[in-house]
Image (cartoon, rainbow, N blue to C red; front, side, top):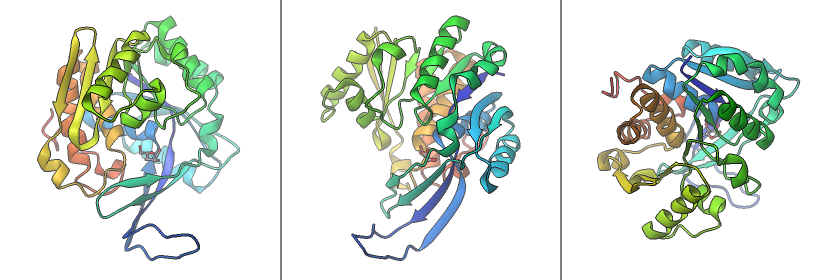
Length: 303
Ligand code: RIB
């Protein structure tokens, strides 16, 4: 295996709405899509569709959704031997996408909240053979910290996507990561610094650098991504056409991380990996659905 994703899986229940209801109001939405999601699973699927061999460590529930999620991993060529069943509901995510393609997401973690350090320990030997560990924050923080420690012990670099933002996340416990990939609001919460201007964003990213993480990549939606390391900072613009054609931005950040992880494992070239990830995420927003919008390397011209 090349990439180990230790993280969540959810069932995405996406309503395409004209507007959100107000208090006590019922409104009709024109369209709906149900599909596989969850930040961890999304990143695993994106990396796998790009061509990486991916191991998934996660927990599903004991309901009708579990089998479908496991089948989905297998259909996408992801090693699911550490997809464990739990006496809980599977994670679900009601999502609302407005006509401007912006999304609002509620997550109910369910089984994901039961993924414990011991579960990751069971996968230690497989993880030790990987070239990158990818983490997000839809599982307990103790599991995230234990996995970062495991990466350091095994000499396997760790990429942390600190999403969704969690005020309890401690910089001290994540400083051994090789990469941190927050969006603007996650960066602000992590550092306690403003992110209103490009200068603010760069300063906040520099603060993460000072905490010990050598590579900070801030995803900026339709603007692209900012990379900051000890040599300086560099902005990578997103494709303007994709932003104009956007219909659903759900899971775009996960598409970016899945493609970045795949490209970095193959090339160890961070800048080339960010460029590829911008193209991949830009393509994903032009299609509806979460994983449904993820292309293969061939489809997106990134072979
Ligand atoms: O990042 C998008 C994802 O966030 C969705 O797939 C949803 O499941 C939530 O985890």
